[in-house]
Image (tube, rainbow, N blue to C red; front, top):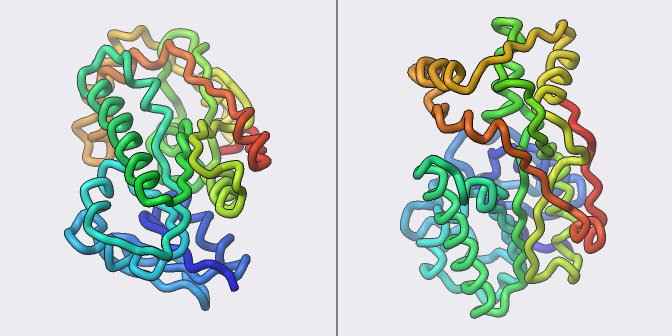
Length: 284
């Protein structure tokens, strides 16, 4: 008998790929989302609710054996004390490598995010260990894969709409974008692999490439000739301050420019060793 799995944040990028895979493997799944369901299967039932609401998480998890949490940890932490489930034996949750990359940022908001992530991780781990629940924590790098992210998807929009993408200077800083489908496979592999119990893994993509190389590959995937605008930091900061006035770009901040000169790369050797993690190269 396959375990009963609850997925919170099921309409996220990882959920987009995870739900069909679990259905194919025969798991009974309860999928939580605040949005309209995007996938259906015989053994899948949706719960349209907000896990930040009091009692919502307890109701979802009352019969679960496995819980895969794709919602930001700080959202579910306040609800953890609201339920008890003796059958819940396994939790896989996601944090972010931003706990490292934002920790020494010049922007106070970034440092606050890093602190929030670190505190949420610590609370989550302590809660699981107090109850004897086997936990695994994934910290992915830049996620892409189904057009819902704010990095690769934004570059793709710029390529298609204006045919040009601005970068800072030579764009030599390294990145490791990770496909959401590879993170979904990581969840499935880790569910029943004891080596992953009570462990944290940084999950990156299958290659390190410069920001410029990443942008060029997006142009290639769109069938367009690369047109890269190399801007000095001050000019790009001004451009971002203007762009963020648009509703769909309101997440942009001038401080992001300071990140463009830093390498954000992580080893995945432990994940490969423990559960065969083998991510693809960047494929927009």
